[in-house]
Structure formats: C-alpha cells, structure tokens
Image (cartoon, rainbow, N blue to C red; front, top):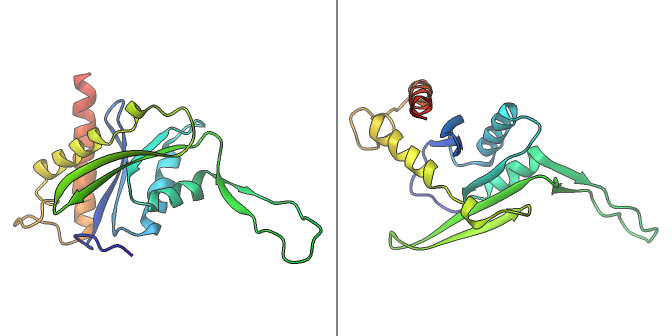
Length: 179
C-alpha cells in the first residue's frame, strides 16, 4: 500500500460543483471502508439519476462506486469441464466517473492527467476538482481545527465532525444567498 504524507484522519467531502453544495462529508483514515461509507451517504441524497463523479486518483473511490452503483454480471455455463466463470461486478450503464491524477516530483506539480474510468459522453471540461480544492482551502483558512501544527488542531474526531458540520451548513447557506 502507498504511504501517504499523513496517515491520520482525512476529511472526505462530497461536493456538488454546480451550486457549491457540500452534500456530505466523513472524517476517517484513507481506507476502503471510509470511501464505501461516503458513497453510501451520497447515494441517500441522490434522486434516481446518477451524476458524474470526479475524484482524485485514489482507487478507493472506484471500488466504492462499483459496490454502490455496480451491476452483478452473471456468465452463462459453457458446458465444458472445470469451474464456471465467477460473476463479476461491472458499472451500470448510467455510471459516469472520471479522475484528476496529479503527478508531483519533489513536491512540484509536474503533470495533471484527466482519466475517464466509467461511462461515455464525458467532456474534458467537466473533469475538474478545482472548486472542491478551493472549498478545502476555505475549510483550512476558516477552521483552525483542520489546520495542522496550530494550537486549535482537533485531536478528538467527534469535535472535528461537529465543527465541520456547522461550518459546512454556514458555507452552504452563505453561498446559496449570493446566487
């Protein structure tokens, strides 16, 4: 497994860029079960239509989206000897997912690559995490609890979740008033 710069808790945020709405968030380590939980929370907020998902290059999202929105494909028996092919989880026809993968060398951004993972009819201009990255910067500037190496850094997960939920509500209501 890849080592991250910080194995502590991460803030996983589901963000609707069109209206700058923080759909949901979860705080936890960079593990598959946390990504699964976030996608499960997102699904509760959605209507019947599945939106375009755009994330960073972390593969946990791919697996979580397949678990939540995938379809189990059964293979027919061939009549030949041996075990039959196991069923496989494949993306549903309306699942669209893309990644923005950033390559850094010695801490300097070298390349930004946009990859389409699932789906069709995804324009390159739709594949962006810019607004979410800006939101994360706003979180760090407005909330001392998520800025590392400060006196106000949250050491207790429950208090950080409480603080983030109240800030998310405030930011969402303020940005909604500007439009």
